[in-house]
Length: 115
Length: 171
Image 1 (cartoon, one colour):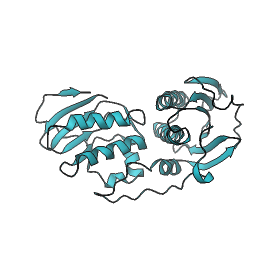
Image 2 (cartoon, rainbow over the protein chains, first blue to last red):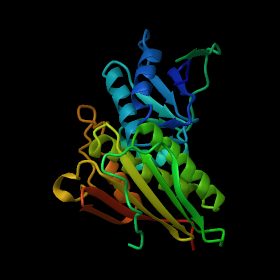
Image 3 (cartoon, each protein chain N blue to C red):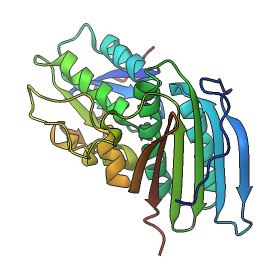
């Protein structure tokens, strides 16, 4: 599971550098995001712009991450591709998350790769 | 339902991932049959879906329609892995008939039957943030939203689930 992290004015941006979040990687995804978010108390913006496939297992993993961070830290989503956006819409989970068209531009250009 | 499944091996037999049973094209360029036998697992689901997608690309199926097909198949195969076989694996046969207007899919497994003898209704779980946000229970809702003619029957120890996906881009 390849993730990148960077700071922005809106919070910690975690970029998912994978094309799929499905049953095969759902648990790994949840753990990797938890590790990437650790050691900070900022809101997390999950940049999903590279993800072209998300099934209900992947959706469940995103919800699990939100619960891990709550109530102190918010989880917001950014850059949903059309097929991923449709899963959120079909399941009405688009009403649960704040969804940004794209991730905020970073104040800190230093990229840290994890996972 | 016109699909007929070839004979299965003995119950509990293992099939290697991505065994190509038969791939026939009708020659029209937009129609064909995609058949796979494999042992249920999260990984083989990926392999089979990638192979089906490549086939749909070749047949010129629109991106949105391919995304629908992939999502429904993923949900149905996840159910087989997680519920019918409870993560232990077992044989799956998948037969997809592709036409210009859509595709018909038949999935067979010899795992546990669907409780109650019928696929669950398509209702969503209760979503009431922040305290009540479900992590699961979306699969059948997605399948029912994106497919038609959903049928299930238990046949001599086998689950047979079939459905159609109408291609939105077809006119």
